[in-house]
Length: 382
Image (cartoon, rainbow, N blue to C red; front, side, top):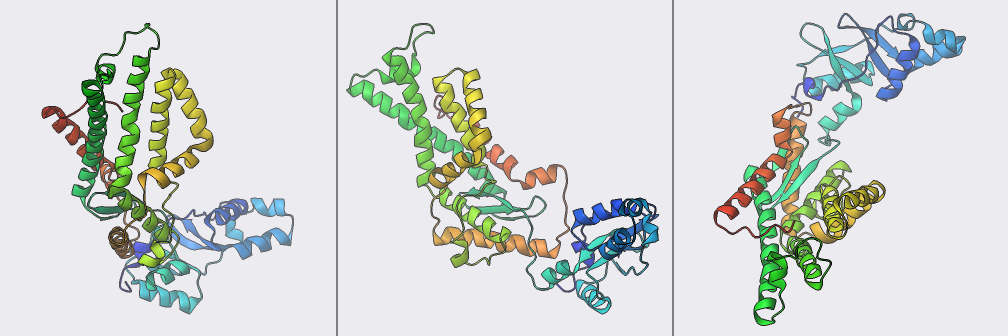
């Protein structure tokens, strides 16, 4: 890690020009959270402006007048720059020699590229640097993690299988409901099978057969959720959340620490899933327009709470040691890749692919298509 070029740690920062007013520089410093900012002229570093110099300008006279003065009146030409190819260990020495909190990084032609801070260097040297935000997915093969730019854990096969698995569980839930309806009609002479396939015509009123048809169709949903809860995928889902919590909170990726992390995560896609479930439930009772209004109203005020309950009691369960270790392996791999190149960026389709959702959707579509080809796909209850 010590030999990694400092360009891998570069962070973008809002800069100021010599002719900018001091008031703009003060706001730029506040937003950046730094104590000094580079002053850029014609793409090159002309000096630095510090919060101490700005404060002195405001207290030396009328603050309103000082606010409109150009930055050049308080600029310090004590600007130390390092080449983007300089190793992190050498940058640490430069910052120590000059007592710097912030150093500008320039290209081989002397043009400003960004800054690095003392804390950036220290985190890299101590191997504690972590991405601020991590996302992930649970799959039948283990945990998948990504920053959007970097990915780790199970590969695309696991993501494809995750999508296919969800559809197969939908098929299984539907067939369980159909099987119960068939048994009830065949041996109990209760026409539940008829309620599914031959619903009464519109305008005929709400008969017991119509109500039974609604109940049968709705029953597939909780059965599907129960299957998800009982099978290993929910354990991997919990492990994924716990590892993400550990990474984002700076906790060690050890089973005893990861196991204490919450199973619920506020950014989980289950929150969206909960909204869809709520909409489906309301649509069984009210018109679609009314169902949408109720769902929107509830989600605006309680979508995280509803999603949290779904995560806690439906889509996750206490993970096994094996599942936690799968999450930890994915987390360690992600951190190692991130520390090798924290500034790595991908754009466009690659970033979308890294989310894992295209693979999940492809897997789900493939399962649906295969089910229809083999006449395995039941009536859609979802």
